Length: 450
Image (cartoon, rainbow, N blue to C red; front, side, top):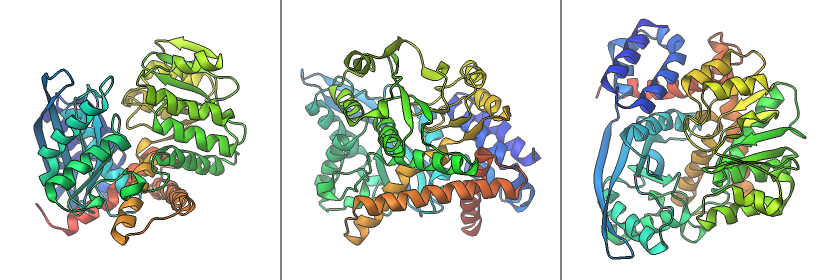
């Protein structure tokens, strides 16, 4: 490893020792880009990597709201505007009890390179709060969102920072936040948020985009390996928008998704979750119920339910973790390899621990694809939504889907080409890191030191 890269990684570990998710991501990305730094000694003189690991700015703020019983509640809000070298800051807002500064920084850092891969002019950011929307009424969620934006609205805008949804934040929450933004600013800047409703500037297929994009990326991997997707069995985690999009596209392409998971365990449907529209549509009912239980699927369709477990022990062709970070540890990785899984396609942000990822990449019979490339379709369609807003246009679902498919093909090609250029073979993890890094690095160098 390049000495400068190693030094920055070690300094990051020391300076951010209490931020494990952030440190893990920095180590994973920078370990891959060492060959690029070898070819550019000027990066060390400009301390490019040292600047790149520090966010340009972070806002933390209190979010005070009143519940339905009249009790005042207080949460912490965050916005990490990590890197704006190639465009306005862009990244989701997450409402989850485990949200903290480390998670915001790792997501913002990862978003920087993911957005770079899309080819669109978008910088990297992330935001959120430790607020838990589960079990809250619509009125409580509205009051929370209004308070959140009352603190944040000064620091976002179409040419500054464009938030979107993430875990715990969907169309309802985006609507409440945009309504408060419009009230406070007194302008109709619908380009300030993406993931909006279709009535005020949203894009068609945005809810499905991350899942659709992941399947389009998978198609490119299979094509590279000379295989077809038809009849392939897929194990996924989660049952939210991303999992729903994967199942919808799998049904169209002839693949069989056989697992879903939730906080209570996982289901195994031998016939396939993606075998009927009724099953795929029931995922929307599960999410809308607020129960957050995947067992509801097993109860309705009479399939296997395994409590308090993850689906990584099932024998399938393809694994697609689509729920949350660190969902697959080293023990799970060993089970995946022992089961003869051929394709490990990350979909959620950093769903694999560094140890597990390294182990899977050592297995010659497994192709590993990284989340920053695989799940870029979501932010890619957000970028397309921004284009539609700026042009006052509404594209058809077919137009958006065609652009999404082309984008994912380009991302796969850029990753594969970057790995090949540096003699790394078909290493999609390193290739995605290199391809995303090079564009951001060049922009930072061209803009001078600040």
